[in-house]
Image (cartoon, rainbow, N blue to C red; front, side, top):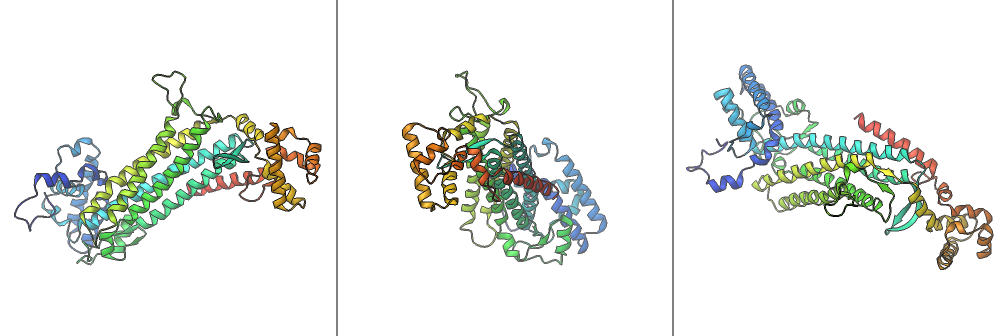
Length: 461
């Protein structure tokens, strides 16, 4: 059964039907389609297209269809072109001739927009819940090693010492922004399109705000042509998903390195790693590599829809059917990756002595020394040169920062005062960085409290 066809003498070719079908992937919209159709059924009653009895008959049939759809057998043998056609066919089988009224004043264009918006809203909330769980795991891992010192890096070179919780809170902030980005995407999806018709608005006096309230939407769309042409809300979701995957990929890259033999900071749990079919000693970070790999597929989904939409004339074009597969794929990959990342973080163990030794053996204290000289009155350019010369001389002699005594520093340059020798220990220099957002111990303790408060606020939303 087609929802169209009166104008045609002949039906579509078998090749075209196969080419154009979308039931194989848009079937996951069935709950959204039925929810939207039930709300539209109530709207039809309010404009006297359906009687109360007819509305009750149709909505009861929808309930039966939804219950039956829980079984995989529901879709077996279905040849309908899309989920909307299948639902209407099933409705007619269960409700009889009255089912023919359900599409009065409604276009499939606005129906697809509604279904997709309902689905995207739910998917956003799932992503936000998973993000919150991952953020909580990061905070918990930070709390396990509150005083651990690690080198911070720029250009993949040891730069300055930071606290382990400070490092983890950097990712917390990234994921918090992702959460907010999804909230912005939710707001753009949270407008109700029914009543827009195919492109010109409905010819029936539907109470659009009442339909929006019925379906839990915050507002109604403002332009019927825009509804038919719009997939911005899908792009917003895909962008938020892509940015979240970018952040996951960066975390994965860090931890792949930090858990390898050359770093040796982290121990990944057996449950998130795998071995080699040939090399008995291997413990491979497959979970993190897969997260990093799936990132490309989500980026591809965003690019795919961007390119699909970029040259379309107003309003609806069948090209827009190609939004569903990238949307569903990105949502699936994001959800799986967030869940996997949470398990990795929850089960990871830091070896604090290893990064602490790496920090102590390197010259991550050089900036601390230069700033101490500046605080003591040495112009910073001169202070920078002195610290740099000290590093160069140390490298020539094979000396570590801890090898220098206060007296030796003063002989190297009179600007070095005896108290500056303590800054040769990375944990001492960090104490000068108590500025808000810095890696000073008190600043980090405060940041952890704020992160816990942020989590509580997100969970109460």
